[in-house]
Length: 270
Image 1 (tube, one colour):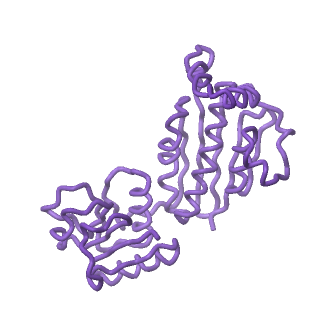
Image 2 (spheres, helix red, strand yellow):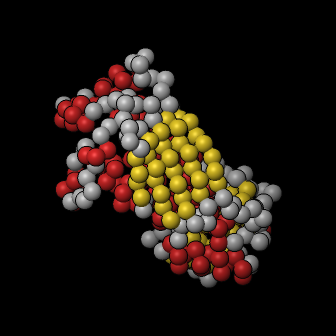
Image 3 (cartoon, rainbow, N blue to C red):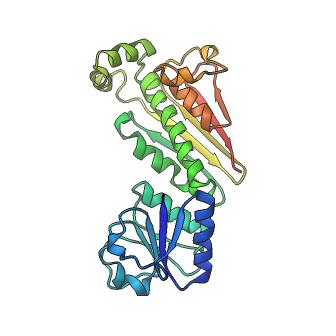
């Protein structure tokens, strides 16, 4: 089970940790009551008052201090004494996804996002790209829901690069996968002057009510009328159309333009 270990005198922060654990299915463990050597903690996350930093010099898991300790040199996050549930979520989400160690201020609460990203055909770094695109979504979604959004978004960006910009057909992918030459096919396409400089443009708009992500590639598009309206469990194991199916499990709507090179993903914020 995922756990948050904490050692703090801040009753308000203890309450926020408890609320987070209840919402996300984590276990909360009070190090002031449990006799656990912090250096023995191998899995989970730690939140502690900065004045206790000497007790955590040998920890191997992500740690957030309430205040900035002067004598602690290992990378850490900083929460201030007014930290709320959202700041605990920001710490956990960032730590889970290899985010940059940073101060998390309780005076900063994101209410609305609207931005435009342009990415290259770096299909081998999709996970990092998706994290950078969605790291602020933690202000709007539970982490468990955010992880699902990332899975669906990853599939759709992969489609935009693979089938859109690189124009790899379903038949080509199936044949290359069956013959263990898929990465050779990818590298061939990535080096082709016709495809290598193409970009994928991603537009994001999110508020307290709705998330909308628009993905536009430079490919020829496809016949969107062939997208299946209903799916069986067997479809999850097929290479062709699997990405759209997975995304449809985690978004409320998936809408394509007529050409098939622009897709809009919509999810309600609940």
